[in-house]
Length: 458
Ligand code: F0G
Image 1 (cartoon, protein in one colour):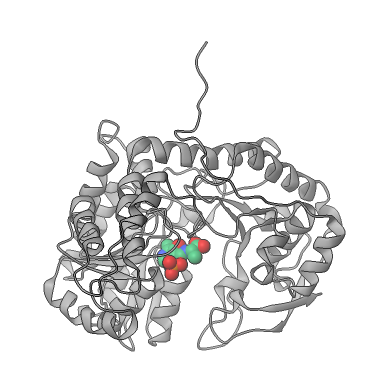
Image 2 (cartoon, helix red, strand yellow):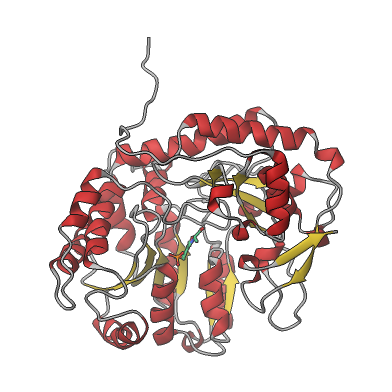
């Protein structure tokens, strides 16, 4: 008999979570103004809001924390991180930051100016926020297949080279500070970018003398997909693939809360010493001195260890197979999800799941609230609330996809939890005909409204 797959770790410490009643959840979500971000975590049974900073660190990471050097300048922990930066990515220069958006803030303070355009594959919301805040424009050049949840494509995160070329031809190089490749493409469903596409984007950008920035949050999951899906990579290690990927990056911003499996942290990687030097000033102003940048020594130690563990095949296989397990259960129950299944999350196609809710009433948010009420499971809307208003017209931007993202924290839940999630989704799907209305906005912030929006039932 062939042995079934099992996790490549065992559990040493646990945290209690509590179920609640439907009646309790109905009251709590109303109190939270139907915004899942406003819920107390104690009122959530299975928390799939994000895979960011929510993973379980290993015994080796915890022991690395005990060895943290808290010196203000030149700490051993900084040098541990510097070594990881060189070994894993081949970056000679780097700055620690407290998380990914801080890395964006520091780097974009050097590079992004009013009137610039920044092409990329579905810029993450804080990335877009940092671009638009500087009165520049993010242009999404993701391939069209990404917007059809049923289209099967092994690298749905890819950049469409024709779309990119048009942006690069229509704008002088002075107006394009860099091209962003988001690895994996979170917004489009945790979808990977192929090595072939990375190379082609870098070649095209180089032709136009424009540097390439990797938004690296899930770079290791991306490498796993290259290894398992792209011809010629099956025999390479994840670390070899990562090194090859980063040959094509001029800069990287990183939210270490994802693939470096820490609760807090980030960094900027640079190949160019001059840009690094300019960024140092902003790092000191916004984050902290250049050898700690908003992180304590113990956190830098855990991060260096996490980068090593996070780029091991066995860990990644366990991780991605769990996401796949949940996705396949949902497919089995007939629930419409983004396919192929992504690296860090399962994305439910809310328009197909709740066909009777008008788009003006925030379909994916409505689904998120229903799933919470059903079983205390918290996902996150990736739809019209997140897409925000057009900065010029202030009209709602209706994205092609209304998604509910169920992000799976790393090494945190078991497949029994995945079974509960799938059953809850099935129950909501079975009563979809009775869900005919959604929500109206009571209050919203002028930018990145989804975090704090207050809603009422339509
Ligand atoms: N880039 C990507 C692709 C991300 O997914 C995130 C965060 C960031 C940048 C910003 O990093 O949170 O450390 O400041 N994504 C989280 C998520 C929040 O839930 O997907 P951060």
